Length: 295
Image (cartoon, rainbow, N blue to C red; front, side, top):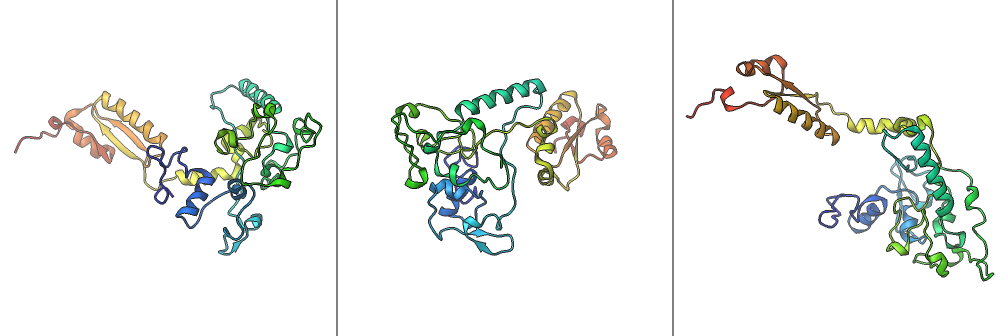
């Protein structure tokens, strides 16, 4: 995709790339691509609930195609919902404080009242098998009348290609965690997914990658495996050893393969023999150690 669809200079293939994410993949499909991996809600999010008929088809694992609304039987698998993360160094009691803070934030600023919800809050409450929990108490009763006594019209009765307009100036100034829309230049999924209905706290083992992702962890493990055995870099000084360790850490942080191990030989005159003994596949020498002379 990065070859087919190029973003702005300095943002290419980054999170800021206009072709990044599920909607970016769909944009690339419409401009130059043939296939895009997206969620079952991406089409409706991009077209605000008015997907052009017969413009897109789902490509099923068996090679057949299906209508976009048949994603339950034609899909390439389910993925867990997004999570809010913190560093593993955070103490358990502090994590609980974070959870309580987010719970209060959701209760206070979760999402707009029902009459102002974008179409997808009402038509896609099923998130594909995940987070199928009842509507939390704090969000019930949002479908009330306006202050003037007029009932809020159903969003499904007035579908449009634009984001819903907030006509109440008080509501216009309000902030919502689970809403992006026109006030942010029609950008979607800012900070949190717009389709989010609530945040469910994770406890204990669920807070680890393995506990949360379960069998999905194996997919990531496979991506990081490399058939090439670890490489050994022989160095001849403490400074080089220090730099080698830093290089090893930097390579590992970017998952570069093969893994790099550092070996120090302080016996300069026997450096060549040391390379043979330690079976290193890389060595650092100085000219005097190799007894090089001008031709």
